[in-house]
Length: 323
Image 1 (cartoon, rainbow, N blue to C red):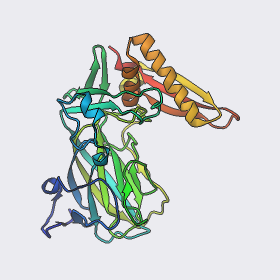
Image 2 (cartoon, one colour; image 1 turned 120 degrees about the vertical axis):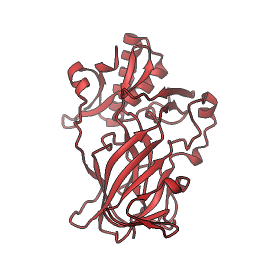
Image 3 (cartoon, rainbow, N blue to C red; image 1 turned 120 degrees about the horizontal axis):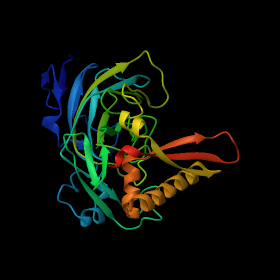
Image 4 (tube, helix red, strand yellow; image 1 turned 90 degrees about the vertical axis):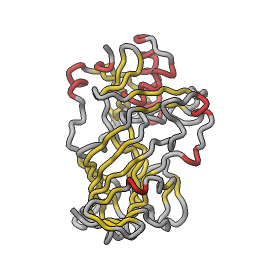
């Protein structure tokens, strides 16, 4: 295992960010001093705060959602400097292990999310994350856990300070639910040292994260970082080892709704709107509950983009959520 140095110059065969857990960044900048420096091939253990930076916790109420300070959301552990990384290289980030906390949350924030024009009031669900790898949504409905890192990114070459919220060619807020244990993400390096940040850990999420939040939860994440000069990429790429379909969902099957429109975003909205109708009618959920369940468990798929003038987006609801 490679040697590593932290900001104080200490070295060791295993570098841990436990001792600099409060040294997080709230945005991307290529002129920020690294909190730790490691050699290519090193492993790091990161203590990652939740997306609210602790503003929403196990005992929170709606006031925490209504009064959230958005200037302090999406903190990432970092920046982490990798010795020898330079523009034109590729940084490989291998997710070795993830351990979630015992609690999580899902919220609807006014003005944020796919259907923000329809859901204009704050809403909050607090989760208990158990050892059985499922979290209870309400009586008869549980969500299987698939932890992953929502934000993995490098500092961009552009000067100045940049928000963590939108993803970029150097990664960031990708929200790709396959980036959990066993996955390796490849990012193009734009600045010396790469300056990696990791945050926004999720216990579960549907493809799309439509209400704007997943099951948000702090986590301990162990990664291996390797500079690759044998690769040439223009945007994030990744390898995954776990199946794209959960075995339980494959056995139980799905119910799917669709959106059909000449615009992919319009079709996406239609698919989720129709899934919300299905959930409210079939299972008696309130619209807010249905919207949030879509965000943490329903997978959006682009089904067709060639039969002009209309495209098809499908929303897949796993039947194994319901007992």
